[in-house]
Image (cartoon, rainbow over all chains, first blue to last red; front, side):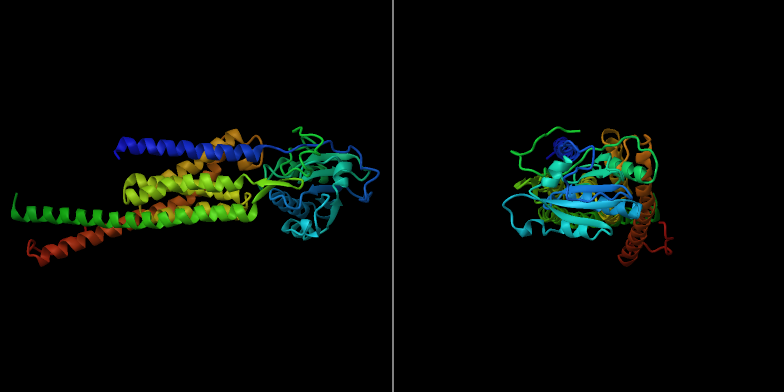
Length: 202
Length: 225
């Protein structure tokens, strides 16, 4: 192969590799459904509202690999704000799965975060009460039960690192004023495609 | 031209030949090392994708996660050309520059496949150290340009993926590139010194051969012939 042929091969290679990375970035930047988060702490939830401090709720799919980054970021968030917030992580357990469904590294990682309460959300009832449809979605309520923040705490799908969501939650918990009260959420759908109520993106 | 001058010229040519042979040997050896590394990284990328993100989920429904085909196809493309060139054109300049580009893009791919873990970012610096095995500082420049270009383009199109904020200053990519250049500074110095050592060895070898075959009968030559 001559020099010209080699240059053509290299250019084609660069285009193929560039297109592959573009596909990857598009996939990772596509947010999940923002759902319709409850503006007030749901009256019928089994979670008790801590009236002495803000309350954070994360709903998660126990098998979702993207949520690993959300849980890792939750651990960093809790390390920064300590006991200024009461945090819950609920893993959705759909109908017809056995007990091993939520026995995953995600559950263990969430349970290992100091001060975080981990539980099972049977049939996704709590997710519906809170209006959440995407794994890794975080809601922050103040001590009176009013919604302060809704969204994800990762910058893209399954990617650790600083994010708008985490920064805004930290601002709210440290009496600063965040620029916004929401953030895009990245993760798997909590419900089967035939039972999702909305696919609206933020 | 006197006999002495022509003998000296012959020694210089012989020293240059030795230098070229030695550098070619280093380039070919390093090409071979990268060929295996490219194969390893491809397999490793697939294993990481399958082990950590095999499926995407929608409730109980699962589908193959995007990371798996990306690791197979994009990883295969990333490694394919460098592997082919190290086999078909070992020692060629184009081969090591393609290897350099591929290697830093492998850093980017592994960072994504591992979910952006901070630890995976060290792959960038390990790769620069590996590339320094070529003892060709231009290869490090190529790698650094691609690291900076990747950050620059993503910093414009998708800034939060690089910096975690939406409106970074336009020059933020230079801050990341600075730390790469910091590593480069030492590696480039080591490349230049490595080549200088080979040059000295080549000169000595040429002198010894000239003395042993009787083509040079004068006094011992200085280090820089």
